Figure 1 (cartoon, rainbow, N blue to C red):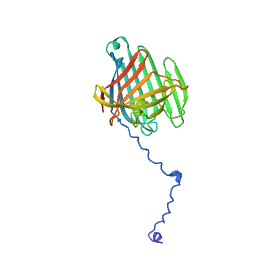
Figure 2: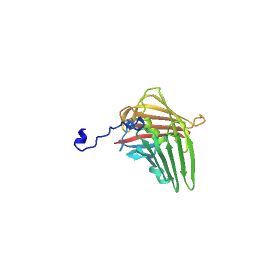
Figure 3: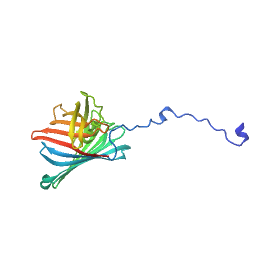
Figure 4: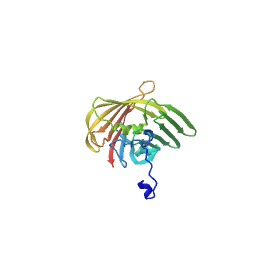
Length: 256
């Protein structure tokens, strides 16, 4: 009646949207001990005798990626000193790490040794438990991988280790795709130690990764990783024991 008197059409009652049409809960970024702009510089040596190479590992930025948002992780390595003069080699590894799931969307490895170049790309479809691997040299090789669980590439796995709750004796399993092959990595928190590093004396957690192939057989030499016991959870040292000695990465500088 009132609407008719003032010349307006009565408003129709508004029906609530069906349950299926309600907005999905907002996604929340996972808390991590790193941020865009972080840069870590490592010296790489063999059996403590020679700094043979350097590596710079950075969180380049946080960007829109594959209908989501991702940290763009980049690692670059090359020889130094005498080795650089006699052996021309360059490696660039990158990974897009989803900020909500902390799973990689895509990873690549570019290597140049003299005149030989190789590009490897792994594309992850985490919801469908699939990954596509492609290697380009003079020819192109492709393969599809079926994943039993969410999977990482080696670079994103290193960053995930920094997010672990450090409790002595606890273990965490990760599926890792490397060069088109799926591995199972079990990482055990061995305990807390004190390291002498170029950054000074540091309290650190020692992690022992055990790498198995898809047949359950050991697939790597002995590995050990030390993560700083502070809010930044920096990878202070990585040791890989091989037949000819120990290859060691030592963190020399850390910048935000």
